[in-house]
Structure formats: C-alpha cells, structure tokens
Length: 498
Ligand code: NAD
Image (cartoon, rainbow, N blue to C red; front, side, top):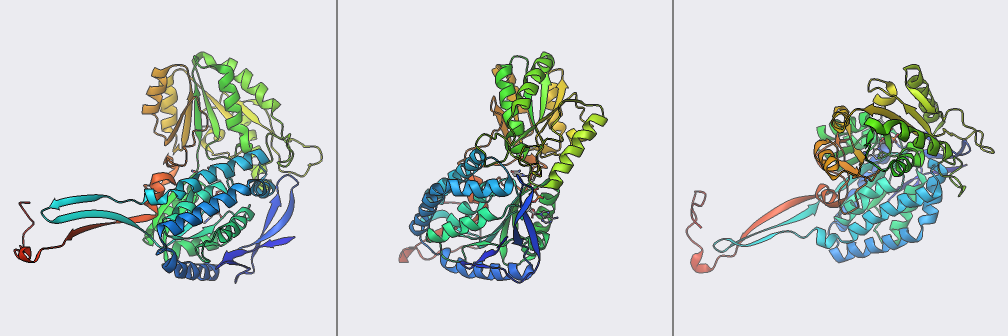
C-alpha cells in the first residue's frame, strides 16, 4: 500500500504530521493507499514556499505565463486516460465520465491560456486636460483552494489555471478521499515549466483547512463542497480578511411540463439523476412532474432507471459506478428507507444491490421515489446518491414556487415545448444556472459557474470572467505629465471645470 504525500516546493514530502487517512477503491471496497493528513506546520511550510515563489512568478511576463499554460494544456490533454483511471479508481465513477470531467477542466485551462486578453485594462485619454486615466489588475499573492471528492480533477481546475495565469501562486487542499489526481497534475505543471512553489498540494482534513483559514499570508480562498462547510469557510476566511468564494451543496429540480417530449425528458432525467451515481453538484435529484405528465413520465423513468448498467468504473460496460465510501452507501440507503416510512412511493429500489465479483463494493442502484412531499427527508436532505425524488405539481407557477422555496439555488431545468413557459421559468427561478431542455446546465469555461442562496457564499462565481476578477485586484492610475509652462495652478478644491 503506497503513501500519498504532499507536493511542496517541487518535491514530495510526508511533512511534519504522522496522521494518515485511508483511500479506498469504491468498486472493491478495499483500501488501496493511505494519504498523509497534514498539520499546521505543513501549511506553514507550503505557504512560505508559495510566498517566495510569488516574488518571481508575479513578475513573469504575460508571454512567459501563457507559454507555461499552453504547455500544461498539452500535457493534460495527452494524459486524459491516465487521469481518468486515477479518478475512477479512487472516486468510483466510470472511465468515460472521468474522462469527461478532465475535458471540462481542460476547457478552463484553455480559457486561462488567453490571459493576456483577459487582463487588458481600460484607458481614457484626456480625462481632464492633460490627464489620462487607466486601469490594470494585479495578482493577490498566495491563493488556496479546498475541494470536494466528487470531481477530483475538474473542480481544482476551476481554480488554479486561472489563479496561476493571473500571476498568483496556489495551494491546493484536495479531498482526502481521492487525492491522487492532484499529485499527478502537480508533476505535469512542473514538466510544463512552472517554477517550483507556484503550485503546491497539501493533503489533509479539517486541521489543514483551519490552518489555511488562519494563515496571514494566504490572500484568498476558493472552496467547493457541502453547504455547512461552505458557510463555515466563508465566515472564517472572511473574519481573517481574506477574499473568499465558497460554493456549497445543491438540490437541483427539473420541471417536466405536459407539453414536453416525455421520452426525451425521461432519458435525460435518468442520465442526470444517475450519472456518476448522483454524486454531481449539478445532478437532478428532484423532478417536478406538472399536471398530466406525471404517470406516463414515471413509467418511462422507472423503466430506464431499471435498465442502467451498474458496475465497476473500469469496466467499459458500466454506465454507473459505486458511491464513494461505505458510509455514503449506508446514509443513502437509510434515507431511501426513511422516504418509504414517511409515505413516499418507492418505484425503483436500489438498496441491497450486489455486483457479481464486486460484492464488497459500495454500490447503490438507481432509485426512483414518487409522491414525495416537500417536508420529507428525501426532499429536504441533499442525498448525493443515485436517488430521484419526484414531486407532483398542478401547474408551472406552483413548480417555480417550489424551487424558490428551496434553500439551495445551484442548477435547475425545464422540459417543455413552450417558449412562453420556458421564458417564465428562466425569469422566475432564483437559481444560478438554468437549463431549457438541457438537464445539467453547466456553463462553458468562458462563462462563470455558480449558484445562488445556500449554494454559494461570496459574491463571485468561479472560473470564467468572474474567476479572473476574483484572483486579481484593480489599480487605477490618473496620470499627468505637465509641460513646464503648465506646472502651476494647483488648487485645494476638487476641480469644477475641465
Ligand atoms: P465536504 O464539504 O465534506 O468536503 C469538501 C472539502 O472540505 C474537503 O476538502 C474536506 O476535506 C473539507 N472538509 C470536510 N469537513 C470539514 C470540516 N469540518 N472543516 C473543514 N474542512 C472540512 O464535501 P464532499 O463530501 O467532499 O463533496 C460533496 C459536496 O460538495 C456536496 O454537497 C456537493 O453538492 C458539493 N459540491 C458543490 C459544487 C458546486 O459547484 N456548488 C461542486 C461539487 C460539489
């Protein structure tokens, strides 16, 4: 069993802590690695290295930074298969889905390759007589990222390509459940020509996170994970004067109107609810069947859910892999039971699924629960597993009200053939990312990603233009080069004439 170590200053190190955590293969249920769980001393060491590297990297020319970014893009693009295998072995998702995750991360790297264009400032000639005004943006310093288990490559890639392209150095604290992809990427950065210390990985749990939040030399924190931790990060990092963006959990609803193509909607609902075993922050976990659509839709969804091929992520026949840990499996199965006890109707039950040859894997089958009421636990909890809860609503306005009453506001979708209903929906829902006949409306890298309400704390979404803004701060210069004969006439008052 190998030990997964920190990456600090261009080398692997076990650091100061003796604590270790297990890394499982969810498809077999076996522990395959241990990961070092760092301490405050490890964070101090990493930040000191990153701070020293900032001196040089923040002064590197735009063309030098761009060259490194392009090299990195090429290296990641050439290693999609290797990265996908690492992800699948520790997270459990199927290889094609893991490769898709790397692809979405690559798109952010490609966006960051255009950093010279993105950092261009404004210039106002002759703002006053003989006076010009211009603006530009500078990096912040050492930035930190704290990321969840469910996208071990893509979510960190929402952060560090943009932060580093902007001239910052970056300390990543990945999820301790699937830490290997981050170490792999660290070596690709080095091969791309990134100076040592610009990209650092410190593994660990709450101890490392708290040390990051306290550290006076960390300027900004980006977090993605569950809502209670996002709220905590936002409060703690804000209290120590850091810039912070903290993306939280989700309960994404898809409304299906009676005028929708029901077969199309059922296919997409099935994929969006059960892809990656429902462990996506943009998974559809609640369907709202409006009016007469309900019964026919439930027949179609139940049939398609039962057909999903569940198996180990490495098997190309598998459409859905296991969930991440034994504890996650237990929690999901217990919530399904609670749904039944509270009166919902279990149409497809994924509990107790056994995959031949992988009897100890953390598998839960696709589950469809109909007649869910908004007070039931399966509706109020973020289950984060392959469970689709279905609520019935009389009309589109009731469905929109239901979405707006939910504390989360990450993503939502509508299936309809009515442009009028779609427009009412897009204007009426209090949600950050909206799909119209698109079930998982993840914006492209050149837009920014982020939810509303309890799905995001902080005022800037992640990557895209808002990412560039998050990782830089503005300067505005008002400049005059007076001719000798004009060098008099200074006044104590604000100017009233130009
Ligand atoms: P999590 O909140 O348990 O962990 C996220 C990170 O926080 C990890 O690095 C973890 O080590 C750290 N952490 C955990 N507990 C902590 C504590 N008590 N104090 C300090 N740090 C702590 O989330 P997860 O289970 O890894 O990921 C799943 C969650 O992430 C879901 O809620 C999902 O919706 C959310 N998510 C949201 C988005 C989004 O864009 N909004 C994207 C992906 C995942």
